[in-house]
Figure 1: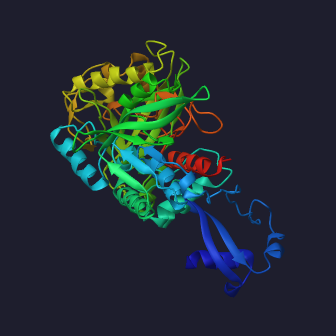
Figure 2 (figure 1 turned 180 degrees about the vertical axis):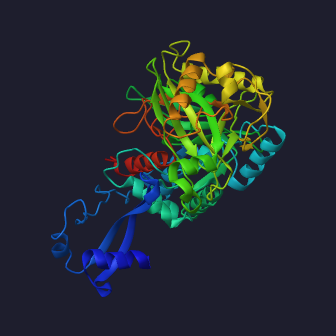
Length: 524
């Protein structure tokens, strides 16, 4: 910070004593000229004579900053006896932030999470990766923190944010143990190792404030009654993992933060006439390269002393399909993220230091209703299951892996080149091309080949493809109106599983919006 302060003094022609505060708003690497790499900072400075200083500079160089805040007033003073019981199904980012916001305002939400607390969840997941013994209720998808707990912990989002929800999410993460740098890095991330501690700390605060988090409790079905020609929620039926006991929990409000892998819940909600519709998502593979290769391409010889290099790639195929990188994990691992027996799905994960020898990214193609096999609302989910079953069978439950050179020739690989898989869970050679639709496979082949022009070595024959990446987003959208409720009143579809988010930050933001809606009647 001392170097930055000296630069400010010189730039603004002011004395050190005139500077009251310096806050880093954004920090990024400018790698357009590899022989002249630089860090780019956006700074918020409090000093004397601000208007006079600003008048000497162009607006895009130095300007007065307008403070952005959430502008709507929330009624947090509703008497407790009038609040009614709120149940939150799911304790991923959406459920955590909804519970936290409600608990801060005196509500006492009951959170039900089918998976386990983060400590026991980690043990269960590690056992699966080491032995292949899958726990269908507690895995990479289900448990405290949601699927994001076993990911890179990326916190960037494309969601437009007029009211400051994004900043609110980041500040909350920092309050509960995340590194402060996430407040200003252009592409902030926490890492799965640190994120686990953050979500645990948030849970402890929710409980301290009067909320209740019940792990190992699965939402089975909902109960409704008709009032003035309108169906409304009155209770939920759940099953306790430890005792196998079934229980009914009364509630006036149900926040559905179930995540995009809760397939049995989708079926149950559909049977209860909760309105849903088909939704497009993306499907493909994970691509692994040596992190050193990515670093040298992005930063040149300076890559070792700069943040671990990432990338973002897109390509339009000759057939009109879009191929793009997704959830890129620098210095990361490809993980077995299965949640159903006889089916296999993969995801990407990085620790905070991003110090694995490989970079990996999903390489995916969008699929939609035109690719599904029926017009049933759950056809997208069935589509996922069909290809996940092929992935499981291709390598006997291990992660299927294939070299790109063999992928192009439609044959099983027999040996690795320079790139050796960095995975969590066992892997085996298989024909990855056969575990995705051929239209997707040909698009990925064309895309990877085209990306050679952007990153030298990207289409090397020893590039690894692992599959199947099928859980990029929810295959359904649970409809909600302007009051954030479904057609069954009192049900609030929320987060990524309901089709309203696409990552940790956007899911957390949606959780906050739902809580604010419940507290004050309007989140906008």
